[in-house]
Structure formats: C-alpha cells, structure tokens
Length: 266
Image (cartoon, rainbow, N blue to C red; front, side, top):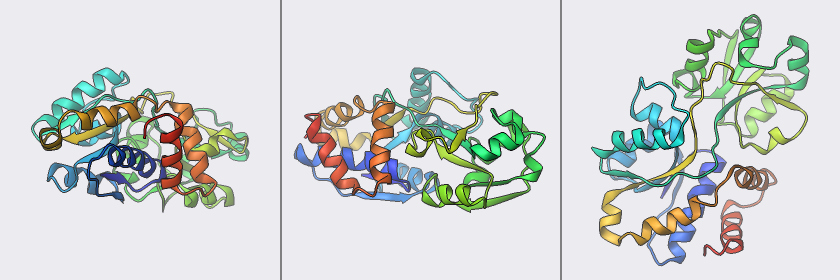
C-alpha cells in the first residue's frame, strides 16, 4: 500500500490499508512514498500494489498530451486503457474529487482585483508563485498555468504539496500565489481566495484506487470489494472534514480507524 507525500493521500492510503488488514489481508504500508514521479514507476514495476490516485493527474502522467477530461467516467475509461498494458486495474472512483487550486490571500485578491486565474495575466510578473518542487514540470500545475494562461511569475518558490509550508508562505507574504488542493480545510475560512479556473485547466480529479491485477488473482475479488466500499464513502465534504482533522494535528492512523468504525467499514 503506497501513497503520495501529502496528508490526504496518506490518510486515504491508511483507510484502505486498515480496512484490508481488518478483513484479513496482509498489508505493508509505504505511505508518503513520494511524488507521482516516484510512486507510479514503483506501481508499474510491481514494487507497490495499491495506490489511491486522482483521475486527471494520473491520466496526465500516464498519457501525456491528452486534453483535460472533465467527465470522471470518461477519464476512468481512458486511465484504464493506459494502465492495461502494465497489468493495473482502475477501480471505481469516489464521488469526491480534489483538484489543484491556485490561491491568494484576500488582501492580495483585493489589491489586484483577482477573482479568476486569467485576472493574474497583467500582474503575474510582479508576483511570486509557490508550489511543490515538481510543479514547474507538471501540466496541471505551473507548466499548465504557463501554457493555458500564459502566466510568467517574477519568481517561483519550491514548497510542500499544499501543506503547512505553503500556508505559512502565503500568510507571511513570502509567496503571493500558491497551489493548494481544493479539499484543504484552510479554504473554508475567510483569509484565502481560491481563484476560478476560468479557462478549464483542471480535469476531473476524483479519488480512484489503482491496483495491480496480480493482487486480485492472488487474493480474489474480495480485495476489490473492501477497497470500493471505502471509496464509495469519500465525497468532498468527507475529504474536507478528514483534512481538517489532520490540520488539527490528529494522527492519521487514529483518524482512519475512527472513521472506518463510524461507517461500519472495519
């Protein structure tokens, strides 16, 4: 069981790992393994077996050049086709999604009249952008902002993946625009403004577990059933609430265990 190196991914990975363990399956956790550039090759090579993915980002990585797909069913079909030669199954996706969002403080929004990403065009050259280290190469991150919105920032700061370093950098004014995930609990407050993606850069980003077919062959369809029972409960309010609990400093294993018990999932 692997996940990406940010809190929500690790928590969803723990949800799956705990549910599978309680169902009697042996699970080795490799949570927060790294960015997609690390995790996806590990999945292809059979070094890890199960990963909680996000439809659009996974498709952009697996099939470069595909235009953004906003319908989750279509995105899932395309991802399944891309993964088929690697013997990886794409399971049912969750109702909830977590997209890349680009955020400014309310003060910055008011100073520059920012409501949508296209409003950054005349002022980006005065602003500093903050995001994860891999953001400049990602088509749904800085590379996409440059191509779709023609944005060129004065400077780019390497931070974490929408976590505490990013929030601190925004709050201190070290960066003016930053990547946060749209299920980040901080967006529920009044201090930050999520800029509208008015040119449609971001695709459907529903949570979707991907599983090596060798695991289904070895352990049977019950593995899939256990995972998909968890996935079906992951709507956006649930993701936001789980992220808020992580932000309060709660242990991700305890959060996962309690949530599964509360929903009769283990």
